[in-house]
Length: 446
Image 1 (cartoon, rainbow, N blue to C red):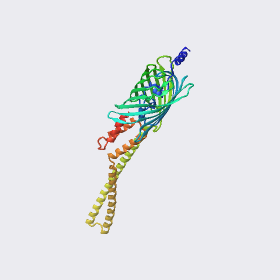
Image 2: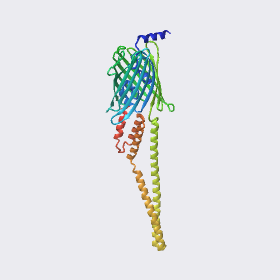
Image 3: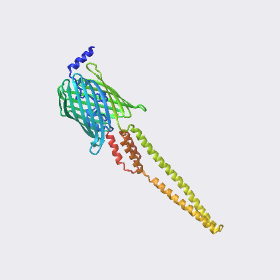
Image 4: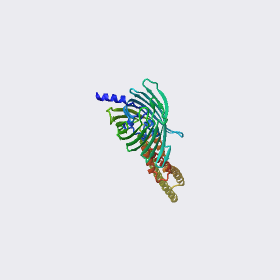
C-alpha cells in the first residue's frame, strides 16, 4: 500500500512523458534498452533513424502495445499503441523503403499524444570499398491534447544517416524533431542520437548515445543505452530470440529484457522494463510483426537447386544414351562393311549370280545409307548436347539466382549461392564480374 502511494505521489510530482520523447515503438527496441539508432532491418527505424528503413527488403507490418512507467526522459504513466509498415521499392528513382507509422499515447492525468509519420530510407545510396552510406527522413504530424484542452496539430521532420562498414557493422546518426514544433507545455524536444551495432551469426550488439534539449516539461537529458539480442533456430518450431538491454540516463535508469518467436512470416515479441531506481513499477510491451513475400526463401532456393540438378542429370543421361546409340551404330556399320567385303569376295570368286549380287548389294547399300544417316544424326545430337558449354551452365545458374533474389531470399542465402557460382566457374573462362559485384553488394548490405 505504501509503495502504491509512493508511486502516485511520484507521478503527481513529475510531469508525465511519452509521445515525442523516445517513447519506444516495439518490444524489440524496448527490450534492447532503446539502442536502435544503428540496428538494421527493424520497423522501429520510423522513430529512431529513418535511414535504416532501406535495410528492410520485405514488406512488413506491425502492431504493438506498450505499458510504460519509465522512459529515457524520466518517469511516466502511459499506454502507447503503435502501428507501422515498411514497403520496399526497387525503381530507377526510388531504391529504398517507404515507411508509415502511427503512435497513440494516453498519458494518465496528462492528455493524449498522437503522431503520424511518413518515412523513406535509401538502399545503397553511395557504395564504397569497405561500406555504404544511406540517408532517410520522416515527415511527422504531431498532436498533443492536454486534458480539458483542444489539441494542436504541428508538423516537423526527422533526419537520419547510416553507414555500413566491414560487412557486419553499422553506424547511425539521427536528429529528431528537427524544427522543434510548438506543442502545449512547450516544444517537442530536438534530439540527437548516435549509435553503432554489430550483427553476426544470430547475435546483435548495439550501443546508443542520445542528447535531448530542454523542454517545457523538464531539463535536457543525456542517455547511454546498450542492447544484446541472440536468435536460436529450430528445425520445426521456428526461431526464438532472447534480448536484454540497459538504459542509463540523467533522470531514468532501467534494465530491460524480452523474448521473440518467429515462424514463417510472423513474429511475436515481448518486453519488460524494470526500473533501477525509484518505485518498482514494471513496464510491459507486446507486439506482432508480419513479413510478406516469400514465406520460406530457403525452401525456394533448395527447389531451384533441385531443379538445376535434375536438368543436369537429364543432360548427362542424354549424353550417355547418345554414346550408347553411337556405339551400336558403329558396330552396325562395321558389320555392314564386313558384309560388303564378303559380297565382293564372293563376286570375285563367282560363287553368286550377277542378279543375286546386285540384289544383295542394293540391300546392303540401303542399310549402309540409313546407318550412316543415323550415325550422322547421332553425332549432330551429341555435338549439340556437348555444345552446352560452361557458359550455358553459368547462365542457368545465374538465372536461378535471379529467381531466388526476386523471391525475397535473405542476403545470407543469396551470398552463399553467389559464392558457389564463383567457386564452380572460377577457371572456366566465363566472365564473373557481375557475380563478383553482386557478392560485394551483399556483403556491404549486411
